[in-house]
Image 1 (cartoon, rainbow, N blue to C red):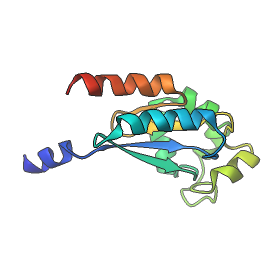
Image 2: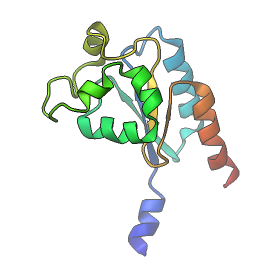
Image 3: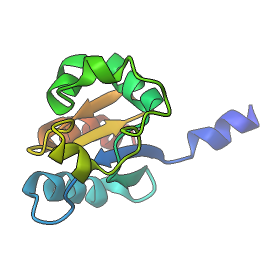
Length: 133
């Protein structure tokens, strides 16, 4: 039981996948919203690398339609081997190759199994957290 209590008090990890940290309004807005509410509840990770195959499969289970919009070659990539060079490569390179949508970032709350590409989705995710405390 004490291990469960310890895990309960760990901040949730929310990853923000983006190829462009500067000059991207959507990324800035999501990051600002997360950081304003973060204190000790969330650990925000900025990822500028393409997800691993395991992460991609997990995200596909959360919202395959959204992931397909973000990763146009999703169905092909899900068939690749985990050591394929695209996995964990720079997102900037993936944008140039047409593997990653350059128009929007993608956030993932791994624990709550939620993901999105805008502030509306993130705001909705954060609201229940605020009300419960």
